[in-house]
Image (cartoon, rainbow, N blue to C red; front, side):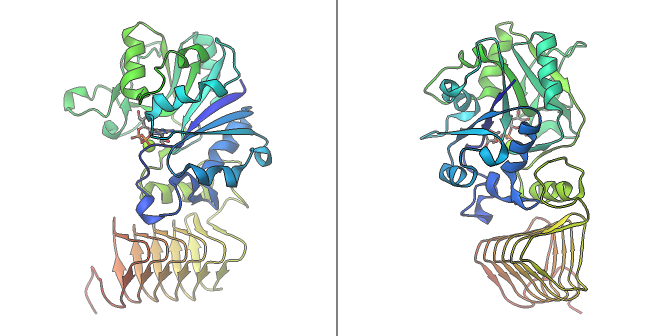
Length: 360
Ligand code: GDD
Ligand code: MG
């Protein structure tokens, strides 16, 4: 088992308005572009050759990761002119694969942070003799995912992407976004047009009697599709809850990158990351948050579960809770911004402009 496809394209990213110049896989999580964690975990599982299937802002990947040698990988890049969907993207890179027709090829969604035992998924694939094997995880609310019921032997009986009605919610097992395909199955995906592996390929394979095997694994798993999830994932990497060989520095309550300035009495907890050149003022308290490079958090600010974009400024005594502040935005002093608020890149909020609690 030596090669994998990483899907990092699509219609853009829900983080995009906050980090205009950075596609989601390149936004730093625990100090390095998120993709680094996936690449390093694949390498640690013995994968040597990875093809990055990209479409959106593809040109930022190659200058950063190059040929992959710094990670011990051989990396290739394939860019779609128009997004081909998950299945189309897989088919589109088939010519770059080196595996023989019966050999296994790993495929990963590019926005998942997980402790999946990659080798165990490949072992399951080989011992079951499946055409495709899928990592499944259990979630409380499966509606945003692909539902994957299995029989008592783990064989997949249906694939229901983003169920719409209560009757369709037949299981809490969902597609966790990591697959092993027998190489020859990839060649059966139609070329040159958009294909959804979830809506077309998997249901089609099942209808044709193919063997899809599920491996339920309850290890750490998070889809980083929203900024809030992204902040959570970054904190979990720093805390050591989410495993990755690529976290720079020791696991603990905080990760302060080189060139950041943190006041002696500032309190950083819960997996907070302070990026290079960022400044945290006296008495500030930051918990479970990501402060990107060059941002400033002024004295006495209280920041929890929030993402502060590059070069953004948070004024003195301002409270942020579950907030996303875009690159270059300025939030004045004595504001209070809560759950779900997004401040657009380069926007300005004056001093004392927004509060939720009393104005005393
Ligand atoms: N190259 C390329 N081209 N990649 C794509 C394209 C495309 O046209 N469309 C999507 N991708 C990549 C995304 O970048 C992401 O890494 C992955 O494929 C999945 O796409 P998402 O848009 O994030 O899908 P989702 O989160 O709604 O659902 C998927 O993931 C769930 C788990 O998080 C599905 O696979 C679900 O079945 C699954 O449960
Ligand atoms: Mg996703």
